[in-house]
Image (cartoon, rainbow, N blue to C red):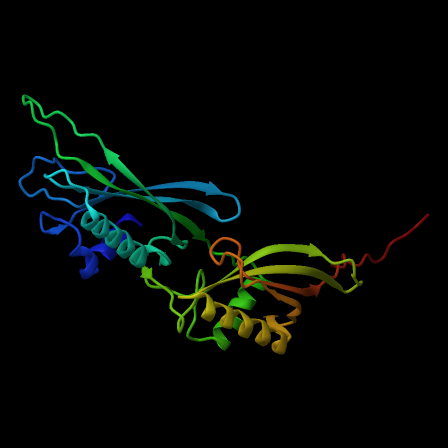
Amino acid sequence: MEGLLENQIFEDFELSGMLASFQGKPAFFCKKIPDETDPGWLYPYVVYDMNMREDPARNRSGTLLLHIYCSDESGCFDEESILELKELESALITVISGTIYTPETQKTSICAVWNHSEAFECEPALLAESDEYTAPVWGLKMSFDLMSFPVQMTADPDPVRAINEWTKSIFDSAGIIAYDTLPEVWKPTNNQPALYWRLNSIVASDDQSNTTIWFDCKITGHVITGNVTDRTAWLKTLAEELNVSGELPLTEDSNFVVKRVTIKPGADPFQKGQIIVKGRYGFLRKTPEQGERLENLNFR
């Protein structure tokens, strides 16, 4: 993902122009910075790092940290400097937050969402073999949450596959995470939202028969768009279409029957999901194989 993030920054000409240039590229570095004595060195620059951890519910999650460093030889951190720093922060949020990264070598998509920013200041350091101090350095630490969207489809009968296929047939413009082949770097819009379905639970139903095994299933959906208004509209339309359809093709012999659809427009679209679909599906019990017929038996 590091390479995808760097390419995204380098290809955004407005943001690139707000950073210093280092060896012909924007000063955007992974984990560490080059030697500050290099004649090509200038401020401002950004150093980023990613911390990933295991998440039982979502496979992997983590944090993306960006440190913006600014400096002024005059040592004057005035209103103009604050404004420039805020503009750079805003540009980074606009470019990164809400972006879905899907490396070509991985099946899991990761979305970055801005969480918060904190100002910091570095104390001037004494230069080696000199009585002079370095110029004051200040900046912002920006924190982005990283949320994984792993593949949820399993084996037949697969209710997640069924709802993915149904969604694509009804909403062709939407990008379905962990189902469609998505661009490596993609930011959903109001006209082309991102949808993600994940399995929440499967429980054997109390209503069983001699011929059919029934399961009650709950699936959670995530709808990601550019703003809250369009997100709510998409949720409402999804809920209506699911209820109208009623049954989603599951296998040749079975359908996923939609029982209840609940939307929660105020829920976190990245972590919690805002639409819950409850339904039922079943499949025929296997008939016990008959053994070989025994003939010409004599009993004494």
